[in-house]
Length: 328
Length: 257
Image 1: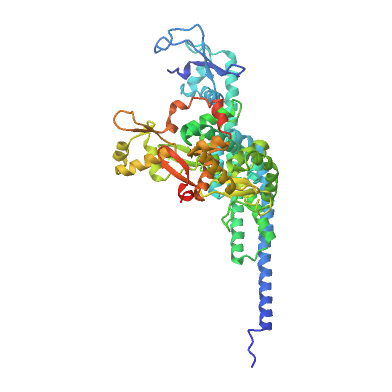
Image 2: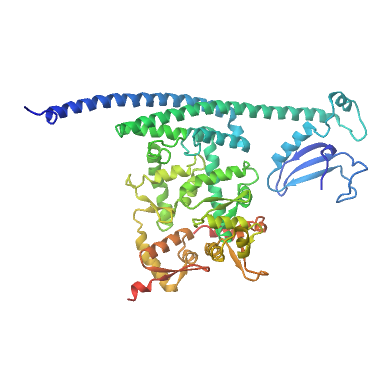
């Protein structure tokens, strides 16, 4: 189902409202006699409406406006195009106001193009300067390597914060960007404050993804990058804060209250599993009120400590109390 | 004759030489650090100027964002490394991608029980757009990929698997090696069979079965024994019918403990 663009006289936007989706109204010429058959024989309206229930209206309108301005289907040499402005021709009735609108659209399009190419130029110039910074940081890093640790701690901290500002990976240690800077120490202290209560509410343990979402949703703006969060958490123990970062064998990272003893939780997990005979991670999670991710880690830890046995089949991973240990 | 070279005098001499060397060395690094500090300030000013003219362009134009990211990568700069970086602070690119990260995590969690933690980039895109609402800034698939790459730092198994021109996004730490990925890539109609694997990949039956069993165990595939011919292994991640379904309130509640 298609309508040639040449049939379009004029387009306008209709904003969305309560219970109404955003629309684009497309006003059309009368259909030419040789038109292909379509879904309807005729219509009393000289326009169609395109309804945008979700998104896409802005982009579609922009592109359609461009096409309407460029009028590529006309492709007439300059001399002939003067003719079309002269007056009504069969099938090409142009309302007066449209010329003004089209000119505006054309200007807007040129402006957008100009903006983009100007932005691009400015961006390229900026990148050249940024590259100089990268080169300089490499040179400093080489000096540091040569001195084999004769650089002062103060200088190291300064260097790291410069790298952090520019987003350059630390060329000396290859460690994650700017870990151990003042910023991350401050952040670690803030996190200790923010996370105390949520951790207590969640049994003393949260996955790093949960923390990332919680903290950023609370901040609203000036959000933390995932790396910021990880780097700050790595400093928690060194700063003797009441939380710590823990990495399980699977690579899953969590924040625990210092007072939280996962190994003790394992004992109660064993009880729960024994009561039910056997449990999968999903079942255990539901019973205890934890996320499946953390439930699985706890059961895996229990298995590692020898309290549980696994039954790994296509039906899923199921844990049983380890009777080899208890009944010997 | 006293032997010199080992003795208090020699040690003192050595220490003096070291101290002089250190001094010179320190001066060298100090110079460069001072230079870097100055250049950093200049750069910050340039970036501020750039931001005042073109910040909107980056916000509104996904293609420009791609150009920007590619150029940064070419020169060895990661504008998304830290929220405290200049790029993030002045251009606002950070907040855009970090918030997107939150939205991606939430969508993946909400749908995990359906698809085992594997979702097509298309479906993820649709669901994220839905969640963002009608008046939010538009987001491209390239934006999603970049946000996901950053999320990997959180350690919870975000992965990007290329399949037939698009990508599958993995959001659980399930072990997927090359064998598993290659089989996923075969499942164009939403399912795959042992015969298909043997024919296309020239594998032994046992190897095919092992891979399929692993996918079943991880909840990424469903077994259909009633299919005509042989057993079909369906991948819910590829069910296009599921795209249009809303995440129900029940499902959303289930994502939180």
